[in-house]
Length: 443
Image: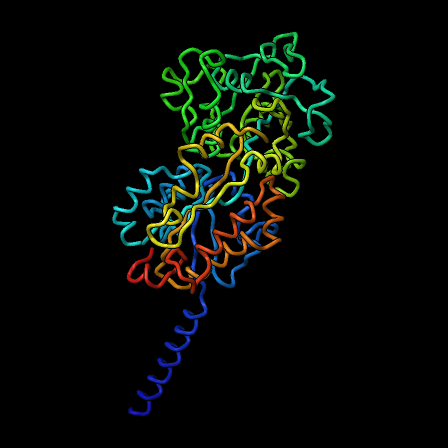
């Protein structure tokens, strides 16, 4: 009997040992989501030519849920994965948002139970992006000077701020009322009604557009009663107190906007349409390697009001508009660099410059990633740090970013991010996983 018991104990010891070895070998799940703009770039496990696909699963299994910037912010701030998908459990390790968190959001997070337990929040620019204006059933292009924006089309329809304010407020509803900046005459001599497709969900793409519209629209070029404000919700009650005009239709997510445009494009007898999208959902001239850019949508160029030049929505022109942004300084917990709102302007001179840039493509900005400085699992800490380090320093990742129509941050800016947040062992307290700051904390 004693021999049998001894054998059973030996078997159980082997089983327990095997379970322990499996647990040690298992990689953690790192969950993130938000912006649909960056979704094709971040990608998924097993999807080639995406950041997660290249990163692989040796350190962690990254998942990304494309649910819109607003949902991404809410998921992270409350550590509520159900904003990503109904019934989803686990931890929200990061979020991506084309709209920066407000000062109030950051302040409230610091005092919340989630923020207190998780440690400091980090918000840093992820990529530079233009916001494009895709068109379907638009008038023929007759220009010989505007830049190319679409495959097979040497020149583009150009729009100026008056056109954008008029169309997106509902003041202009027909191409025969849209003025060609090149000729100062209407684009169409006959009636060609315009349908406007807008984002219904809480969207950072909407925020980048409305930030510009709020800066350049006035009573003279905007429909009476419409007042644009910087908002993640395009059809907010301040902008449209009586609701959106009758020629507006809504769609959810970047993919939903693209689908709505394509449906209008292929339906006989439908009116012309315009929308706003990131370049990775438009065509392969702007985003040559995007998995979402096979529709070859026609895209407008824009006139920069400050210098009168035409700009295509390219990554390079977006970087020109964003300019040589300067990272906040300091390495202590009370320095400007420790304030998440200082890395992405939400007010002040820098914000105004981004809303209406003096040069480059007029509707441009950055998309952000939101992280925790502290994670309960050291394996998650390492995986998140290594993923970000690859994003900001690896040429393969830069190629993926640019292939989707975006641009990397200026090298001095990304270098500061790496130094401040991803470098351990230096005399600061900002790096992810800092042993002093993160003692007893972590989501």
